[in-house]
Image (cartoon, rainbow, N blue to C red; front, side, top):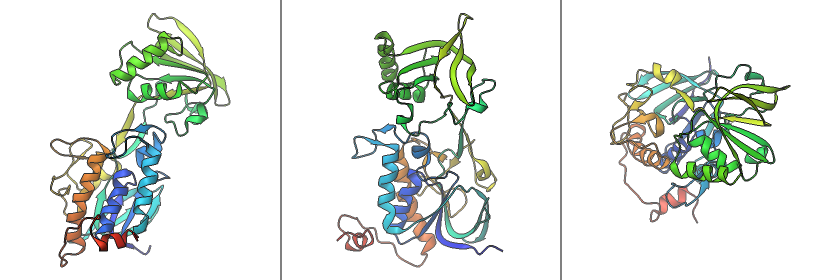
Length: 342
């Protein structure tokens, strides 16, 4: 029998919202453990766009996904959270009012007063393009995310897609790649108009290529692509030389085991109240992209706000007989002491 790990709060997901929740909970003297299916903290910011710029974090004009993660890790350091990475929550069992026993797929057992679901869109995986024989190239010369831009320096890149991810990475990688070709099935794009205009300007200047059609095959050996076969809208097939292929066909988000936790669902999202972002199950909260409520915006800053209000209600469960006095970090010496401010 595995000895249960006891904690005040168990957070499912170690992305930006989960990390900031640690900060808000820590200010109120609640300790946290975090479980994430990824092998690193940072959620989608770290996994999908660590070097992609983010412009809408309040007070920070520009920061990368990795930069947000590192800043949040520095912010929560005083509270010593424990991370359990590469694990997935399999079951939640109510053992109190509220009190939960939670098990992971790695055999760990937690006993916690509060559960906070901060799992983004759930477990996510990129949609694989319909290209026969693509599997041997995946991870070697076909990539569904850009971890390090420098890995594509001076290479011939084939980027496939017509949404924001495809256009963003086309514009970000074009200056460092030897040559970029963007392939999309039609001459209309779902990306931001400004990005589309910039891409078209680069094509007009001869700085990159745009091919209308679909990738139907890859040529190469030992997982290293040498060219892609593209069938144009006119039916003609041409070979485009490339050393790496970046297909951006979107992500498939799956709630996974969350769907079996007796929590009310609205499709793939979790409805919550807007007073504390609590689910229909007392003691289980949902913050960030995984929740839904009237007026919901899927922004990191919205998730930060949700985490702050969640912590206030969580305190009532963890310390039912303790009066909570609201304080500001700018003026409270007790909060500053917790943060190590001298």
